[in-house]
Image 1 (tube, rainbow, N blue to C red):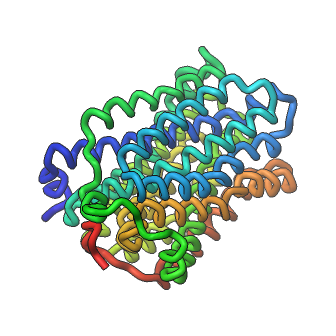
Image 2 (cartoon, rainbow, N blue to C red):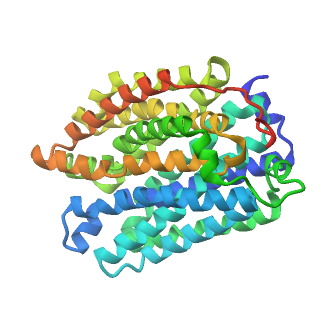
Length: 409
């Protein structure tokens, strides 16, 4: 079955699950990436250096593992659907509260709490989708689902370019509260995961998490290491790129927005292509190929002299970065133990985020030590992360095509 045929074969309930999972991650990413466009503006308002404000990004990433753990446990116990709705409401409310920040300290606290809520969404949404959809469509769905992240970045870039001059940074965070409306769609259209229902038929308790993790600790440690490399690869090429364009090249908000729109079109293209391709060639081969394709593009992306060439570099690099990421939902859920699939993928993903959470601070520090050369800092991290990701992936396991019915061993 081809990738497109796999999508067309989805029934009404499966399409609703796919749409809800995609939109949940898209709007979560939209709320997260609004901040990366506003670091310099917030720094100016609160009279703080950029590196200090960038701690807001780090704290968001830092608290995501705790959210993945708590919401994952709840999803394994009470089901994917109700916990996903509660999580979306929480991160939307916290995004709105960010607009009311009266100091840098209050903003940092709110972004830490937002990170807690954000941490729950990916693991629950991806497990709901992967458990509910046919195995033949898993690759293409994985690619599209993960590129909800790029769709969210794209929406944030468009909102920044169009709305920032009109509503300012606080108004953008008010717009970021709109994802709460998605809960109405989920409540009306999205059924519970059939795999979760099968696993809980006739019983009310899930197996204890810690004994399950103890039984699978080598796999868990590998997944955390893999996701650390993934997060260095993505956040190292995304979080400070708007700051690089503004501070080092002096580009206006409209041009920055246009370059990042191009980057995210590349990300969407790469994620969908490599996600679908992984169904044919395997998850590991698709990830390694995408990661290594980033290396020859990095000089253009980080050191090009004109906005047009920077846009081309951003487009090509994100094909590689999000091409690798497009395989992640399928790969992690296939590797996950069945009884804790609501917890295992999300926690390993977000612990990788934790270990990579100070990437923006490190890159800002490297740039400041080299006379504001953000391009150098971006290039060093991107190249190192690409090589590490390819090596870790090639060394690890694969479980493509595994049955995810809630009863598998």
